[in-house]
Length: 136
Image (cartoon, rainbow, N blue to C red; front, side, top):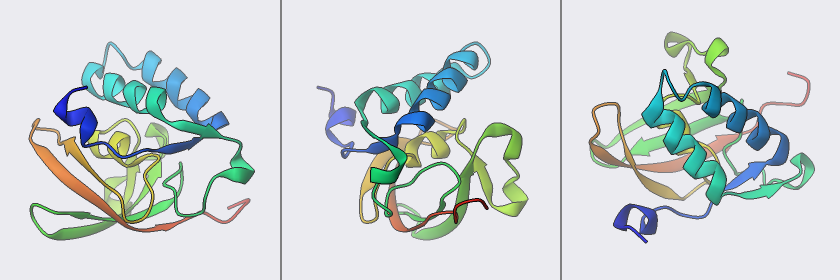
């Protein structure tokens, strides 16, 4: 086990999202090899659940996530979305970004040591998760 793996808390994913994200990551391997590999690693280590059994405080697709960058002390709130829905100015962050791949599956209170776009490791801590209402 590498030091980085030791720093990663257990994560949870919805079965259908894990399948969709696996296909997305495999499809992006040539364009985004680093993010694709990181996302596939996270899916592989996740505990997979049916949608109705996922705890409400777990970061899932379309959830609104408040997280703190412990190095800078800044807090951001974003919605985790698929690439076609991404709009950083509206707070919608793609799962196919380093931060998006790092947030998926974490629970409130958990933190993860995760590389940013420049490859620098940052500790991200989940402050609050709000699920999108059904049908929204």
